[in-house]
Length: 330
Image: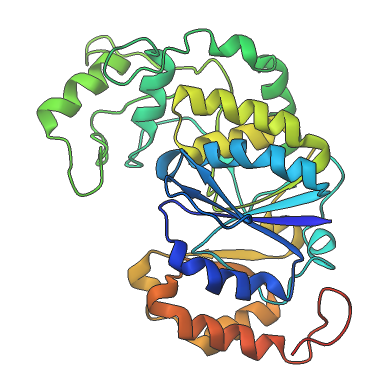
């Protein structure tokens, strides 16, 4: 049995009927987790996590998933279009999943020289200063609830060829002052003391080696096997308490908990991540051809604006396709 768990960064209950239609012919067990907004629909779970910390939604959903008896759970965001040719009969084999394994489209060791990715500073700040009164979590003993970091790091380096470099700040690099925020950028006079508090002044620079080996990667599509769900949930809970950004929390927890994490390239697939302005120009023909070859998923799709395109793609690929019980789909 497979449970599909659809996650929302922000509550869009009006889109749930359309999403049910998208998955109904392919997966028997589909549930939804949305932040804040209550619902009387028994298939909808309300969570008080979301957006930057949607791994908290996974923490909330996993007990219900375990109770349902699922052998694998597909966590997928509402704006991800999964290949319509994948269903509960073929997705496990196509993604190369094992009893204690998982799938994430791609992930990597998180470390090295600071770049313009805006979330790095927040992750480091919360790890280094968990007790500060502005952004601290209070979880000063978090490392005691995690596996042995040296053993985990050695395993990940051996299994995936990772190199967990300490974080450093090259003040003279073009991206030496990373962006902090979207839309409302923090001014330079605020960013400078944050950076120097973490990395020291120019004449006495230092690096940061986190207390646990961190990974990063897109977390909008994750498949987890039942055998590792409890360990995965426990690690996610620690990272939720720390307030770590989700695209660090999920890959790190997955890599630490899973016997093996399959990536897209391991099974001849690719994931297409685009910002909304690029996605608006995508044609149905391009998507259909991609899904017929090696495209696993495309992101983002906004059903309120692109519902007709999604319907066209799914309808074209559904003709004559075996349904979840083996009969032809209509």
